[in-house]
Amino acid sequence: QVVVEVFNNLLTESLTIHWHGMHQKKSPYMDGAAYISQCPIQAKQKFTYKFKAYPAGTHFYHGSFANQRVDGLFGMIIVHKQLPTIPEIPLTVTDWFKEEALTIDLNSPYRFGVKGAGQLTPFSTLLGGRGRWNDNTYPLREYTVETGRNHKFRLASSAMEHTYEVSIDGHVLTLVALDGQEINPI
Image 1: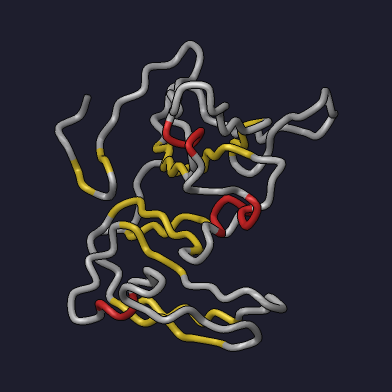
Image 2: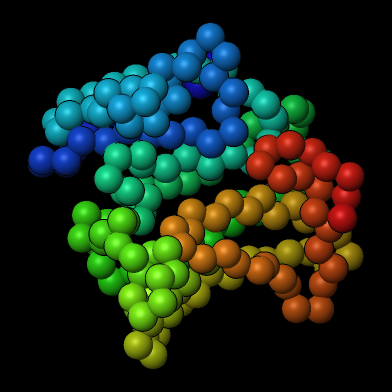
């Protein structure tokens, strides 16, 4: 059972949290899809999400009102079948825009590739919440792994517009699950 109490500390904006991959059997009203399965949580109000964490795997949650995930309201929810036997490293990747979510016109023709309409382009990519912009000196996210040992990277993308190809130089990656569902290793 997952219990998450959300207090909307925003001054004027509503919010909901959408839980990707959680089946929500017997709790469809906890899915957090704004105006579909839940009315938004009003500013300065709270709401408690209660649902069974199922199935096991790496899942993703995000703000589902006014595209708040663009402004950073997202994260991972990891459901284990059993305690991990190898080190696990959670990793998020997302595009980073100069614009705030409320200022991006999601119906604009450039978003759909209309010729001559321009393009919605992020100014950086964030890996584990960190990225570079304008030759700044912010430290990038670093991960330490043990030589000769397997590690499980749990990857979730909150990208709005772009797909990312993830690789680690000099290493072989084996894909074992997609969207919380185990697959034959690739």
